[in-house]
Image: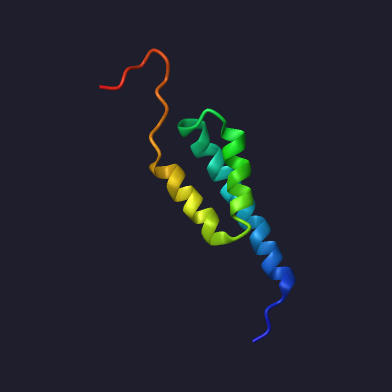
Length: 72
């Protein structure tokens, strides 16, 4: 079976972009630096399993407490 390296590169690029967008969205709620969360998501997703693990870690992280709201 012949697998073209260009197709793999395109898959990794698209996957990195998708993971970066999802990481930014999650980073807005769960971190103080959402841009850094998006960059880390894109870098980790060069190896797709690391990108997925990073997203799972972000999903299970607690949300930040907004000022004026108390956690009960």
